[in-house]
Length: 595
Image 1 (cartoon, rainbow, N blue to C red):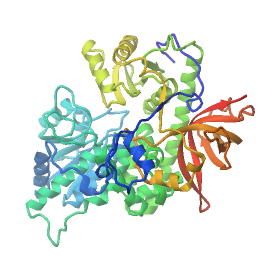
Image 2 (cartoon, helix red, strand yellow):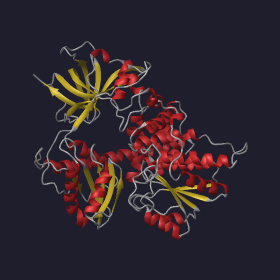
Image 3 (cartoon, rainbow, N blue to C red):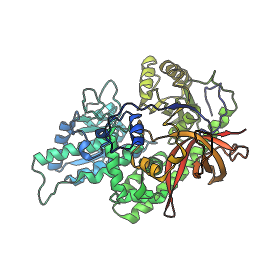
Image 4 (tube, rainbow, N blue to C red):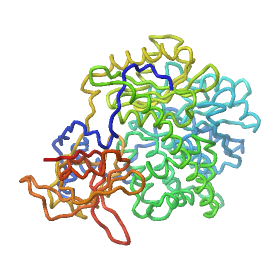
């Protein structure tokens, strides 16, 4: 492995690396008495201050008045009424897969006679509507290309389509660059001049809004009749919720509405057979599904197809109406996810082996970490970057070979550094250094010449140093405080489960405190199962006995027979086992306390 870090360290697993605790402070709220005091405190600490802000009915969605929607709906309505051939070009992650499915199913439900999809294989064509993928698309002779979850930076691809006489409708949510593609219409809440309030929609949310506007346009044209009934687009909300959670976009109110409505459909069993099948292979109970399950159980299995093979496998799973077919495809996706995890672990071991040979402390840790190994898998470097970021609390970019001359990197950030803005500034300071880049605040992708790697490493470190403070580069966890022994109840645990959906920028409640360690043992390969007794403010261990689990623990340190007490940062949850509900703590960080 090749890295420009002459300064690196060995460190414990993130779950054992106890961070600084920052206590969340709740703002003054105006909730009614119907909202329990605990939730008032938690909501207030997340900037949600009144009953209306926690409403998640569909009536809370902003009206479909996004810039470009009127043009897009007219373009699509004309195409549907004249039976033109529509081709959806998606992205190769979970948001792209769900966006593709929502577009395909929605357009068909609204009367489109000819709709197909094409998703670039990331290893052959890269991201977005490139000229190369346009050439492949042209073989299907589409009359209109519709991009989902991509396209805002596809200037050359849209131009290539125009040369072939194929108009392009761009639907995207990624941040635009200085120039926009010359498309027939662009729908993106983040484009300049768009006043739509919900800027954090995922790609699937943008496509859902396009369908809402299209239905309104077709309604005005008297398109629907007894023979052609109006589509119920709410039937797509299970897919919208899945893509929204998996893309880790901020869960402001609009996204919370979309996710809540989708979760309700899934819990009630009114969802796509593919989602049911993915939950089954993941061992999840659909009736108790929470947002985190979509992010950690369903999303990774769909993403595994795009990372290792072809996301079309995941799309087929989500599109099929046959439950047996869905289960077979879900099993294939589960196998791919197991393979992905094995590759990821091998790559992480490679990275940590190199890092552990070097000495790194607070005085010389780099501001931004870059890692590269020619043997690494291009589809898994993003997950590796995330793992290293969690370990060292620094922005990380992991690189793999794209071809003989070019490398591709996947970047993950920490709170306080907007990755895409940082890469944009770097590109302006060093013209020609980056071949391509794009992304969000917390995740981004880029490519550059291998010969420029060392120059990029220095430039990235300097940019991160300029844009961050020492405090932002210090590992810290926000806590909602300490719970008392009487708070560890099923009622409180179930209240927190139902109070979400929790997610990005609307984080699931975390608490901290000390516990007497009654039992400890390893389950699975690397999970620490514990039995705990809460310690009250007076320092006494209560009578309550609570189960707890810490995933992916450092087995060199745990179990720890010397530890009589532990300090934890944890989530309060409930566990259903053999039809019995019990309180369970999900431990994020653990520190042994010994006499």
